[in-house]
Length: 275
Image (cartoon, rainbow, N blue to C red):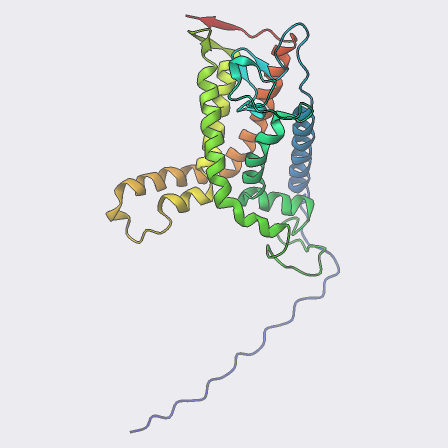
């Protein structure tokens, strides 16, 4: 027995998009957020560039401006080029002295942050206006996604995460050393600043979307992997505040570097107590 089925009917085309000359009909200050983000990013880039190359030796000492015993600036950690303070030196590498050790160190954290999913959204909107805000047309006539240079390099994010975790571990160790005053346990303002810096860096790095995938991205049954499920749950909680972790850690790096510089050059006195 044959069954005659009705011919498939093509869906009627929807109405064409309204021809609106204005970029958006939004009446709120939609431009404020991308503007603040652009200013914040630009300020950090300017400061980080200045800090990377402004590392003179403190007058009358063998210490550079980025080290105030026992504190080492996160911009210069780990310190492994020739000329590093002996207390913070990891290795003596015969590198040109005009090159700041921060240049070697910032490459990996910069690669991680520049390819971060949150930061990509933020600077796409703020600098490239792609798009600048929801329901606001972008000025670009075409869209190629992340398939061309240099945006195709964003695919290294999951690999940059491993390097970022190593850097986070090193900064955590620096925070521990910040409580070591010539072999005695002590607590200073710099100790607390470095400790907060380590917590913020770890919170941002562990809350990364790639970390969620690493912990349990390929699992089909959480019940069979309880440990990885707990790890995934913890990372997911951090991921819920990924934007806040990203900004807090970025700002606090500047705070930590600025404080250590001011202590090193004698502008500030580090208040601490040794037990």
